[in-house]
Length: 82
Image 1 (spheres, helix red, strand yellow):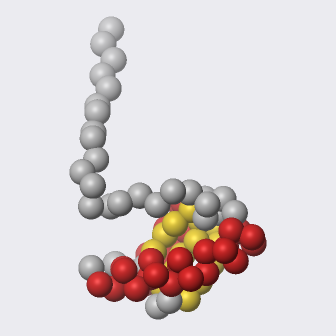
Image 2 (cartoon, one colour; image 1 turned 60 degrees about the vertical axis):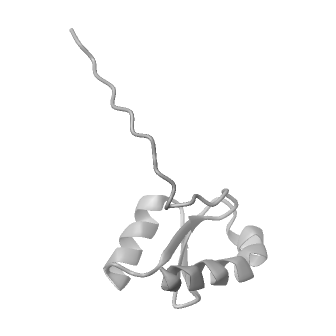
């Protein structure tokens, strides 16, 4: 858990530059460094997993409100019947 907090702090230090240069893009932060900025989550996550395996690394969309990954998510399944 402490490792991801280091990556979050690194993101926060670079946040103003990221918002100026990469607003709306997905970024990968690893080892307190910006690895890259990507158009979509899929590309960012694929790059991160290929390079760093299970992490730790941070994926975040620049400009979006951060999500607390430790908050339980509500799952709702939809069904269609004929």
